Image 1: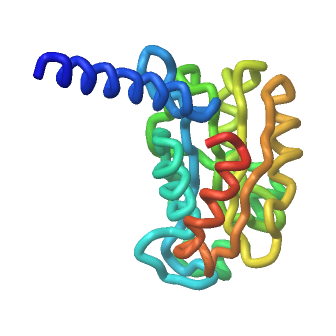
Image 2: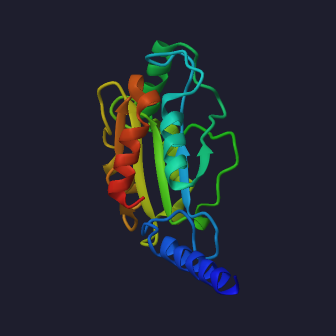
Length: 204
């Protein structure tokens, strides 16, 4: 019986070592056990293209990323809410771009220094990130570091990733930028498989 127990314990230990060794290079925790993936997103539910929705399209993708990576989510909440009307929101978005505006963020910003990989997601407005994403970027200079990896993700009905990659590279030239993900907002609710395949290609 003692020999059998020793054999079982040895097998369990060996399996544990194998499991640790087989984790992907981009595993979501540091050696000290702290989470190192941050998922930043801005999402809407009222009067979106295929709305109103219970869960915003971009939030659905953020949740899918979280499930795969074990990362920490941070939702950007505007201090001044955008209009409920879809058409009025597009007008506001256009003015913000033309004025190079930086809409205020209501909630406390995350401590990005704790994370090595940051996903940044939103709907695409007029072929680019909403300007409130630029507010976040301006307030997070610590992301401009060779130790940081930044990955865009978007929901859109025709603009894809827009110019998100070039926006990130311009804001944070020292950081590494990896291949982004985009999906039509109307398909976000059933995109988990596509998200997983994309993340797998990145090492998750």
